[in-house]
Image (cartoon, rainbow, N blue to C red):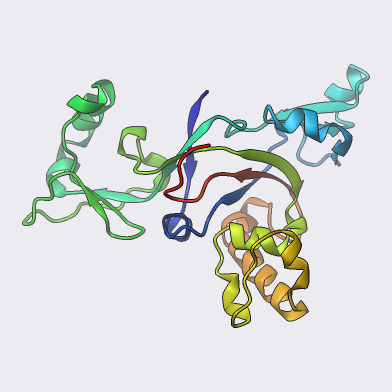
Length: 246
């Protein structure tokens, strides 16, 4: 079992901690197999590979052509079912901590959990704090989620499922699992299962998918992996906030 960090923006953090988010999507990175090559996912091998976090694609890049397999194996960057994730989110230290940041981070990271010093920190997503807050000390500069150290993370959860699909294949049920409040489109309509999503009104489905498209593009369009490009994505599932690990 391994534990890796996963970047969550403020909306993701709030949705997860509200108990709405149990799924997240991240673009598949083909690396040396060439981002401009056409890749076809081997659905026939999906069951065997997803359990260990590896996806197999038919590929015609130079490497795969050279060994006559015409297949490339792409490993999930965040792990497989049974591995754990910890959320990395935007945060601030109080000014005294900002001034001693390098020393304190090094010290805390090398000490056993019970012995670590109390850290004056605030999570930007909801303003929650940890450690003993010095009331008269101002908060320091905003620190992006990518810089959050493991020892400061407040949420950890296991991966319960991994699969690969095109981003535009997202179902209405999955839009809800991504944390969007889709029940607001039609009063009293609630999606309790993948099958129940098929009973949703067409306008409901279109509105929910449009909201997810806007959310996706706000993060990935500038990376060339926007909705219209319809990239392959990793789909990670995990327990609802507060639920015990399976």
